[in-house]
Length: 312
Figure 1 (tube, rainbow, N blue to C red):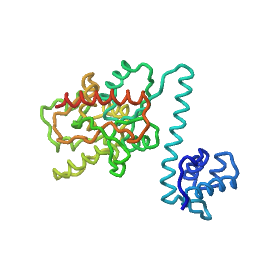
Figure 2: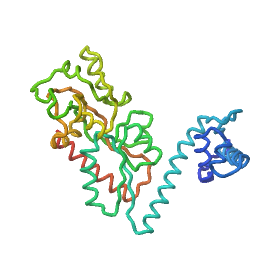
Figure 3: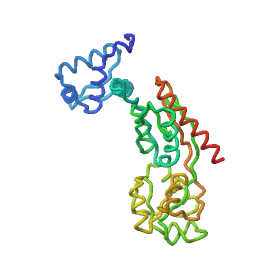
Figure 4: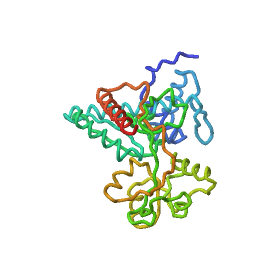
């Protein structure tokens, strides 16, 4: 078996791997890269010869990744993303601009922890411009692995990624129930689980941790799962639906607090006894950290420590 020397791999070969994975066709991949099919075939063959393994199985209808191809392509996606971001950083510096820092955050932390950390970051590091995206944990972790983000605030479910990621716990999130101001439940001093179950729910998507916990709560109490005519994690949609209907929704208490303070929503007096846990600052274990990334991580770590002290 030939010795695998990473420095011998060309950027064009990495691009071809990604295109082949996306299209499953040498012809289509070659077209996307502006080369002939024969040139693409030679490029792939030379890479396989260099590494000493088959990366794609050839079939009449196209190509299919082998486990070796999957492993290398996953890294190729990350490597190409890093190169693209490096080019963006250089362009910004040449123009005298600020260095970009990309952060992903799950919805529940986007109205409390994230804004507080960003305010502190702006004070300490005026040379950084931050791009933030809010999404589900699974999407954020995939984006982090593909180098779309420098770090994310998310939950890690895939134990196989433990060796590749650094997880730093932020805080557990107790969950509450919320309705519109003036809702019949908002005027009650104590509400039972059976009562809130009679209302139409705005539910989180089925694959989310909160949905699993809500279903588990119902099962533990011998009840059918909460019924809902809407599944969404969109804050504008949730707020709009609550304001115009008698629907109810479960939200992390810290996330909902500012909306309760400005009387956009109202809390229902019930303790569900469930929380979202394992939420943390997640970064790549072996990433080469820029000074900006180190500064950003340190600010978020400090804010995390303050948050844990506040809730204890």
